[in-house]
Image (cartoon, rainbow, N blue to C red; front, side):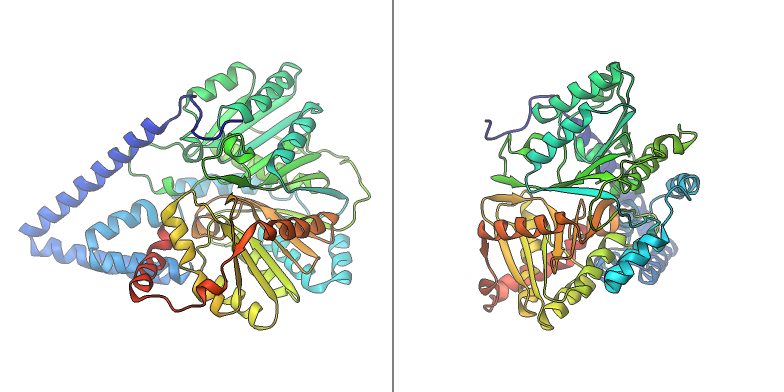
Amino acid sequence: MRTEGRTEVKNSVGRLIFVAVSVLVQVGWFLILVLRLNEYSAGISIASGILALCAVLAIYGKRINAAYKMPWIMLILAFPVLGLSLYLLAGRSGVTRRMQKRFAQIDAELDGLLRQDEEVMERLERQDLTAANQARYLSCRGGYPVWQDTDVVFYADAADGLAAQKEAMEKAQKFIFMEYHAIEDAESFEGIRTILAKKARQGVEVRVIYDDVGSIGFINPSFIRRMEAEGIACRVFNPLMPVANVFMNNRDHRKITVIDGQVGFTGGYNLADEYFNLTHPYGHWKDTGVRLEGDAVQSLTVIFLEMWNAIRKTDGDYRDYLPKAVCRTKAQGFVQPYADSPLDGEPTGENVYMNVIKGAQRYVYFTTPYLIISDEMGRELGLAAKRGVDVRIITPGIPDKKMVFRATRSYYAGLVRDGVRIFEYTPGFIHAKQCVSDDRIATVGTINLDYRSLYLHFENGVWMYGCSAVGDVKKDFEQTFLACEEVTEKYKSRRTASLRAGQYLLRLISPLL
């Protein structure tokens, strides 16, 4: 088993450097031009100041988290030209009108494909009104129904999820859809590629989406040509371009596999070797996932079709991919796959987490690779702890990004002060994004407790109530706690002035990381 290093397959790091340099040159040229003009004209200087003030007022009036607004407001007021340039490039979560229009068109065409069965909702209401209210939020505001007749299997190890995924793909008869933030053309993906090529030769429709930034350290554009040469349709989301692009900051962070519209997989893991501990760049990698079989898979199918056609519209009748008779199971409980988008102004992922926290009566546990949360999320976690709920958060013991790790730790003291318990996963890096509460509710998906996941990225998850998988998630937490160091007491002690100053600065810029 390999222990260190990246694959030798050619990646796109050189292209990333070229794009970064190109964008910096454009921003630098713009700054020099404006600053030079300001020297020669008091009117231009006044105009740029007024423009910066207008931008600050516009940011202040946006319906976004206050902690995300503050760093941009301070930067623009302190350095109007530089701050405004950076905000236009990387600060806007609303993306471009062209992309908004494209997604809106696809969503309109998909509207009505997923319908809430009110009998299912009424059954959930009779069992647990609080849980039903959470499910109704996703159904009404997101358009993602809550389903029954769906079997859920939880995988505490990403390698087990990958093995089950390949086994299900071998049985595909109609189509295989895959959408991943990161794909590495190496050992872990080789088994998948072999199956996809074989199924394509058998007449199965095979589609793959990957995010350009997420995969840029692993593959280059020739990957698409290799896939298509084997009959695998392949698309890249939001390719990096050597021009200043306000949409560059919004990435596809979803992880979805759908087979024949009847079996689906999602979770925290991408299709790269480190996720399955074939390489160990950050110690032991801990990740999880779920397998769905039954009615709820239709939601994953629609989520994939939205992204596929938003990249390039090619599908006509979407109903061709929604089976009329989904495999019925005798599974207990309720399942609700959902997606989050930076386009609609609705922080669905964050709201799901906060609804779980609000409804918790005995305990609520989270795992997240990054802990950079809003004031609202921090207050909900603290309030739950103050009313006697056992609130615990697991973060990595070995970081993949040191600055983000320091920013994560800057949130510990405030949470601990309110009664939240913090654990660090000592064997390595924990990448799982999941929570469980009161042996009733669990979520597993792609959504980190950080600003990028909660406000800037396209994400997805699965909300579960009363399923046997909820108990399996709880068991995974119990086992993971044994591999953690609890640092709660450590962050109760008084910090030095220099440490506090450094953490305050990190807290200020953390929404921008």
